[in-house]
Image 1 (cartoon, rainbow, N blue to C red):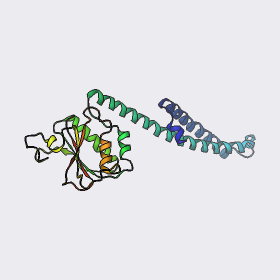
Image 2: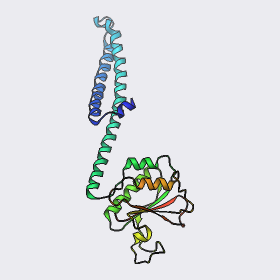
Image 3: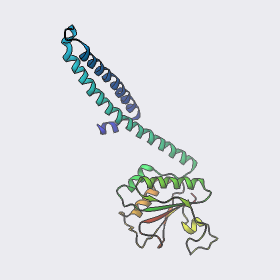
Image 4: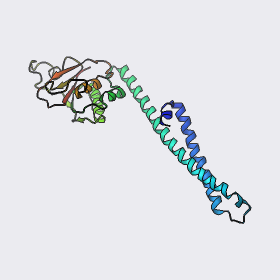
Length: 234
């Protein structure tokens, strides 16, 4: 039944949901009539000969209402999934029109599924609404995937890569000359396709829209499987 429900379009789901709701009402009424008739009609009444029919009506009403309730639950969940997907697609279209970066939630979640989990810090460029919004998307994605996500914070204004002087913008000193960077201890982290770093990089890079260039920076101070996602200007 699940596969059948999952294959329904939005219109078909709405139609089936209305039928299920009508079924709940009809079978509920059938049970009520059958139960009242069976309980209240005296044995000497001429309708008592239909007692078996009334019992069958009551039983059929209970069974039918139960089946209709299950269908209503499954169809409601499927409709909610369709609406949520449509809203995400609408949001993505708006983001594309605005030139904002965005994550394809379904694609990104797939990259993280059944992969090792780690700890993530998410830093974003100060005074940049778009960078903050994209950082929030990454936080929500990783949290839902079971990662440990520390509170978001601004890219620090001091220190960073020692190869750069302090007059270089913080997002370059801490990140890269890209729109997003992942800091990791490349000496101890698993860099293969089965590692958390690879899964994180694929997820964060899932349909990033404008400014989709991403880099990875080595930071030997970080513990194993502890990553810093630096969201820079798009």
